[in-house]
Image 1 (tube, protein in one colour):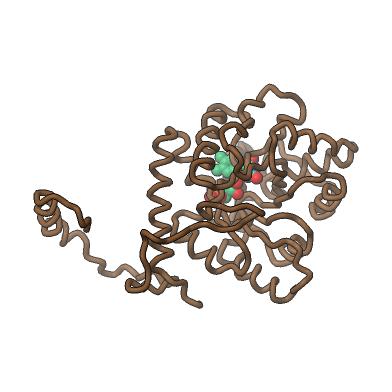
Image 2: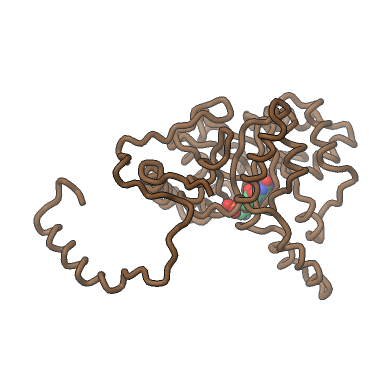
Length: 340
Ligand SMILES: Cc1cc2nc3c(=O)[nH]c(=O)nc-3n(C[C@H](O)[C@H](O)[C@H](O)COP(=O)(O)O)c2cc1C
């Protein structure tokens, strides 16, 4: 209740309360088991969401996960997202910048430095393109790409499942971890490694945590699913056989537990200390839960949630984000994550 309301507002509210009481009964709806609600112990107005991540201060612990480029509306979507990032002190990854390896026809879709200001801004390439660049001894193209976009670094998306399901997809000749190591030898820029929505298991996480990369983005199972999406694009009558792959993966909850377990097990062998928890994050409550749970500097990332509003307009995207941030402040002020 606002401390500064008008008498007729109070009258309307009381009327609403009476009318809406019967539709607000929480019968047979389970309480969220993740949190203790502690209404006496916080204050939303004085809750600070700042966090130190990737060597910079994030005003809010939120990452805009890699999405589109080189497609219709890509420029508008990326511009909206970059402006949002700048205003709210977030960080952002671009969608695959593969097209920029051959020519600059689509450069303006990706060229967001002017909009994003000095916020963390990463270019993005798939493991298949990187393997090709290594094989062809053209890894200098990666440095050129980072320079061209004035980016802070490179996100490598590792998506063998998606590539397999794509009619035009690339099959890999080497295990991605080998390609990543080769890239690290050649390229002097920050590196983040992610999946694209299936997540990854314990052994892949162990391999990444012991590499001196700048962050791992979980891109976990439970949200956008590219195996499923590519299956929908496949027209072959036998393709349905592959639908079993759409349910393979690791969700954010499992991945956070694995990361914590591996951190304890590997101790000083852990060389990557920043985690972006993403994949299926639908609300500030999910995001808050995971960044509180993981025992490393972290932010949470969302792709499809931001896309929904970035497609409409900057104003709608900002309105959504303001509500999201207020919800996150309330969560931090009054919710404590249970040790389950
Ligand atoms: C339209 C769209 C395009 C995407 N393109 C890329 C891409 O080019 N590179 C990449 O690393 N991830 C890409 N992703 C995957 C996301 O970064 C993210 O890992 C995945 O969507 C899970 O997040 P979500 O559940 O919040 O959508 C894309 C996602 C969407 C929705």
